[in-house]
Structure formats: structure tokens, C-alpha cells
Image (cartoon, rainbow over all chains, first blue to last red; front, top):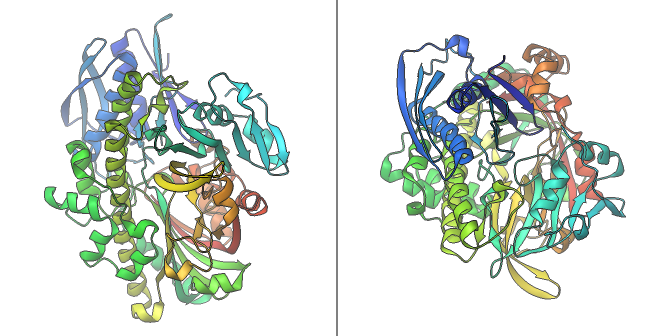
Length: 137
Length: 485
């Protein structure tokens, strides 16, 4: 089964990510988002960053998680390709993101993502787990 | 994607109303500017539903408006305009968007198409090298922790103070390039950390620098006031915004205002419409932080202008005076502004949200610089990189019915993903080259995503605004060369 699908949206780009668990679906959502930033095939794992975020509910937590990764990308110029969600409850997430500093000669960089939004935000646990988010691109 | 089959009642050839009765909770009707042949496209997606959702905002006056470049966004539609009362109304960060003060700036030159075409490749290379672009790009200016606050308060004025451009540039920038009310203490450290390394960068996505040639002049006298005299004259258009700083400010305040909306008991059909009363602490804080991000964007466009001038100098070996790279104007198209309008016979102070819409003030408006008092404000409307762009001026009618606003571009018709699946960067490069348009891009996929066919026809979009009386077309320009982020 695919880790994520792209949702058609005229101005922006949606991601629907899947997993056996919520942790896995959150990790796959981050992976899906980073495929829009840098081709993961060209990214190596030379370092990792610990990510901790808080939010009011699980949906907001998904947005906060993705936006925190975009913050790290901007501030440290890092791109990621693998994500491990270590702990996730209704209001807190801790995770590790693995990747490396941007190297414009080696990485295939894409047009990127501005932010994760609250629009059409959905978490569905009826049959496996799927999470959906619209990214401002 | 689901289509939309709600009511669009025809008012005249260019105006379509969504009645209040469409959805319980709408405080005002919706109004979409479009012509009949645009309607099937509009109905194919959920943008019209978003127009109806925006009509839920407390204190909204007039109509929830959408310009003919309307397309599906998040929260607000893109091309959306909503004015709320500053006494009883709300401000919504989603009505501005993540790229706060994304906008465009136009420069004119004394150069003409043949002399620029013969050096075009070199010019694009220079622009590409001198203006950092693409994902994760960092600027050539190092802005320290203390100096970033200065940038956020002064905007383009900060950049001019550092030697990037002249006071003359500021006179023809919306708000003089620095919006009042900016308070850096309302901007998070995270936003400032994102902004520090990115000062003076183009970014990616749909941001660009485009070398253009004047193609048609509709109003010669007004064009002359702008320094545009004849077809073939070369222009330069810069499109970018507030980068990661703006994105973080929006994210911070959408979160904060979601909580505020709950506290003030505001019910909304979409979480991305999170809002707070304009007069509340939360609302004021957002506007103070938004002004900072807007100023950051103006500083950004000002720095890029400087490097663009240097690039031209390097290629043509002429003095700046000889080349005449002077600003026509600079407009914001993602912003909320406090402006005064007459509503139902009464002067009212309003918070005008423009989400992918351009301010279009008429002749005589007190906020215009002396140079444009007689003509009306230049309105810069870029099309896609394969067709053309327009310069128009605002009208009194825009003040009367659209809170001094018109469209901001062509508007997408096809998603980025669908565009990437349909053709490749190389196809787009080839097609443009066959028509004499050269391109450079920092990111893989950006040319495919930004191809002409992914956009509405800009001629039709601008004609709707012109024919509806919201603006007057002045100049049309065609692309010669484009640097994409």
C-alpha cells in the first residue's frame, strides 16, 4: 500500500497519508510533504533532529508537526527523508526527523511548501489510519 | 474534486450573486466577478463555497467578494476580498494567507526589446546568480537579531537606508513600503529566526523575476506618467513575498485565533477562517505582527530590486541613469488593511482582507503619491509566464463596490500535481523557447507547475475587471525571459 497519496487541489497540494498506527500515518504525512521539497532519493541520512510539539487536539497536532519541520528546514537549511514518531497523544508529539543539510548540487529540489493549513484537515481511524492535510504551496 | 452546484444569480454580465439564503449563517451575500464562460470552471471546484463561508465572518459588510481570478484556496478563496467593520467585525489571518504581502513590483527601463534580446541569456544568468532563489535559499545580507526588528518596522525604508535603492522607490510603493502599526514584539522568535537568513531571497513556487516587452498601450497619457512610452520598451516585474517569516506569523496567529474564536463564541464553517474581533487584544496583535511581515516583504522586494539593477548594469555596461530602471509601482496582494469606505450612506472604518486581490485606488485618492493623484493607482496584474501581464489603474467604481480591489493575476485552473503529471519542465522550456521566451528555474518541477495551460487566460480575467468598471487597462506586456524560484 502507498504511504501517501496526493490530493488534487487547484492552488495548493493535499496529502493523504496512511499507516497501521497514527504514529505511522503522521510520519508518512511528513514524508509526503518532503517529497514536495527535495526528492528523497537524493537525500542522505547524516543527522537527525528531535521534534516536540504541542497543540489543542490531534488534528492541530498534525499541522503543528508539519509546520515545525518547515521551521527547521528554514532555520537550519535541513531536508529530511525519514521520520520516527516516538510518542503521540491528543496534545503532544515527539519525533525524530532524519536527513541532511541542503546541498543544491546533489539534491533535486522541488518548488517546496509554504505551510500546512487547517483546511480539510482530517484524521480517520475507521479502517487503518489515514490523515489528510492541505499544504499551501 | 467535487463540483459546486449552489446558486449563482446573474446580476449583470459580469456579476454573479450567491444569496444569503444559500447557507444559514451567511451574514451578507457573496458576489463573484466573472463572465458566463468562466462559470463552468468556477463550478468545478469549491471556491464558491469558500466565498459563502467567508460571508459568515462577524461584522462583514457589503458582499463576500471574489475577483475573476477566483480559485480554490484554503479558508478564503484566492481572489477573495472581505471587508469587516473595525468596531464589530473580526480579522482573520486566513484572509491574508501564509505569504503575507506577497506582491508585485514593476520597473520600467529606457531599453528596448532588440538590444535586450541579444543579451537576454546573459541577463537571466546574472539575475539568477544575483538573486538567491529556490527551497532553503539564504540571502546575501546578514540581518542580525537586533536589525531584524528594524526591518520589520521600517520595511523597504530599512533597505533603502542600507543602500538598496532610493527614496524615489519608496514614493511609488504601497504604504511607502512600510505599513504603520508594526510591532516586532508581536512577532515570535521563531518567525524572526526564519526571516533572518532569508532576507533578500526570491523563494520558490510561483515567485519570479520577469523581463518583459511592452506590447500594447491602451491609455498613452496614463502610461507616460508611469514612464511607459512605447511598444517594445523593456519592463521588469518582480513577484515575491515575506518568505518563512510570513508563513510563521500566519501559522502562529491562526493557532492563537482559533482559541480566541472559541473564547469570543464565534462559530465558523472552516477552521482556517479562525478570527478574532479587530478591536480585541488578539486581533490587534495579529495586525501588528502582520504589518511586520508585510514590511519584511517590502524590504525583500526592495533588496531584489537593487540586485536586479546591478544585474542590468553588469550586462549592458551602462549607468543606472542611462538604463532608467525606475519603479512604476509596488502592490501587495495578500494583506489586510484598515481603510475607510462609505457603506449604506455612512463613512465606516473597515478591515479589508485581500487574499489574492490588489488594491486599486482611483484618481484623487489621498493615499496616492503625487505622481499618480491624477491617474489613479497603478494596478499590477501578472499573467502566466507564457502569455502576458497588465498594468491598470483603479477607479471610483472599485471604491464603491469592491473596497478598492481588483484581481491579482490569472488564477490557476489546474493543480500543480496534475500539471507535473501532464508535462515536464523540458516540454515547457521548449515550448516557451519556440516563442522566444527564455527561462531559468531553481527547482525541479516549477516550470511544469507554472506552465500557461495551468492558468486561466489573463486577457479574459482582466477584461472582466475592466468591463465591470473596477479598473482601466493601461498597458499590456509580454514576457521575454523569466527567472523562476
